[in-house]
Length: 441
Ligand code: SF4
Ligand code: SF4
Ligand code: SF4
Image (cartoon, rainbow, N blue to C red; front, side):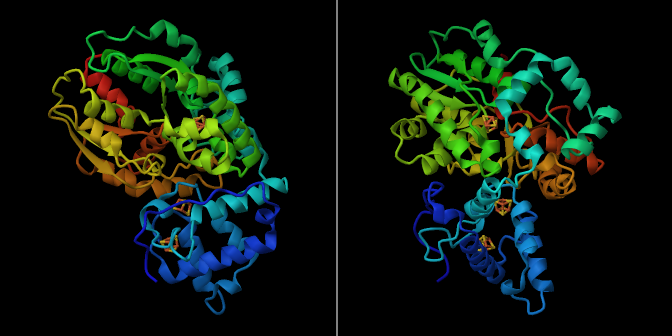
């Protein structure tokens, strides 16, 4: 049967069920799903996983999935960035369809088995320790930033040979003072004349917002406070998205339990939770409830979490926004995969349309970065290749500004633009920065 008329759903991830880790069962499920994809091929141009799969089948002796070797099955898993695009935008066979096909979560299952067998690469394991890395990096920001500078041939060469991080890949620089440490000093009191006066928001600074680039956080603080919202910034810990990418689901469950317990009393006191990074929002809203489905604090947090663009758009409808100056700029908006995966529509576009005379235009392609996936030597060229259609589309209208809700996609797209020979903007920041600029804040 072609497609389902019902809304797509996702199953709870049975990471505590031994049967989920059975390798023969995984092999059978990979072949079942790959065979459906072979007959369908809608996703041929979304990422590198599908071309790898289809080429392998086309070159197999009988052009059958059954002919594929284990390394060929695995190559498809390795190329997946867990962007969710196939599930969200293309696949007609997602649950409740009887084919019951959730390609990204099948890739996740394969990674979980790898992780349990201790086969996750050292660099993947170490880079996923975001809180530790962030604290260390901030403490020695000067040295860390010198060492990770792509112009520093010696240290980047060393990073490439030891950790497998491609020497050309952009690696985020560290801030000397984490956002959460300076937030109290830079957060204005809520504007009593702001239309949203009385609202309370905890900005959940993800690792990147906290340790690497506080610019989107500072912009969000200003925009919300100007509109009357009481703001505080918290970083209870990393949401564990990089560990999720590694298939380390016990670590994700632990983060979900601890962080949701931290936020629970705040939610009960009337605070809304607004992550600054789309991937964190996706974890809190959707992935954690699939991993800890019985945990009441996780369920509560999921209900009270709003992506920052989503929150501003909701305020505009509920209370109205403080007047915004006209800004006659064309704005190319990259629709980050993890914003799309939140199933809320292109909220950054909607938000930027609230600026009088602004002309935002949406680009829906994946940047190719995929969390930490794109920085590795094995993946960097593919990450650039996958990002090229997005970069081309962003540049099409010769925009005044380019933005992305994903803090890793922005610098990566800048790099992709540079590889095409086009002039890249100095910064591809978060759309909330444009809102702050329009407010003159
Ligand atoms: S989740 Fe993204 S990278 Fe993975 S197979 Fe689907 S589209 Fe490709
Ligand atoms: S994931 Fe779905 S839409 Fe994509 S190729 Fe497979 S069956 Fe087709
Ligand atoms: S998804 Fe968010 S909290 Fe998690 S690692 Fe990334 S930035 Fe950190």
